[in-house]
Figure 1 (cartoon, helix red, strand yellow):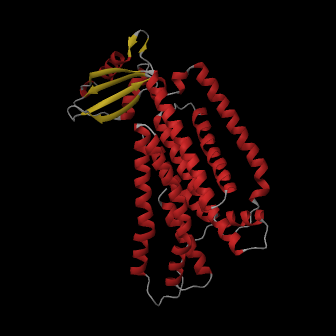
Figure 2: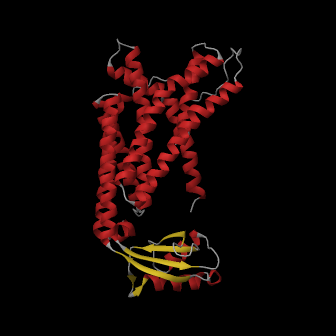
Length: 367
């Protein structure tokens, strides 16, 4: 997400070069014109992080801290550090613009004309995937919802040597623990490394999950010397509390977003941003569950990241609409909205592509 601010600045610098400005003047104007969009988008997401920290539970608060720290640091590097680099390297007398590859030329796409069919298509996907999710939950909720939400067993093991997480999951899956969530941690008592295995099942085929885990790892990787040192049940009440805390925190965060965007823009903008955000989260959640994935706290963290990323993207377009409304008093509102989306299209595609590179690496090389 951090690259977004840099791309926004460089796109603005490109526009200043097209107006015929010198290198020094283009850089200064690019930073000045990008500042408000960066400030509004990051502050909206930072507000979300603060609210999630205040009203969320442990895992949600951890996400909020990471999100907030990342935003503050990325804003500093984008607005201060890179500006210092430009000031130190751009010659005072340089007039010739820097060469910048422009894959997306000036466009004039009528996005709003395609709004109705796009909305109907999105609505169909959301309804179909959420209906499928409801059916899957009614059939086997343990297969759909993780132990964080349903309750189950948490097994802690010591080991002589770490094993690959992928191999561990495969060994546990072969033993019938298909929903096992495995993670290396440090023991609170001794500080030594331990392996934590969570499952939404307390027992499988009359045998406790702890015993099944021990037998499976003894058979698959005896050299690692895994040994059960802790076995506890996670009650459904814990899962309900986590779910309730997450819902309350997100609802309050959304209210905070609406208030901030209304103050900075208008209520109509806030409502539109909220609908776009809900669309992005529901589409992602629906496709994720339709592919047979299990919903747990990691899923919640990913969806909260999309909340931040989505509103960030939307605010950038809102900022351009606000700017064009101020500069153009003659054109109709819909025409200005279309123009703003075309003006920011290159930046939207660039930031999406750069984010996809990072996410693609996680998908291909991650566990």
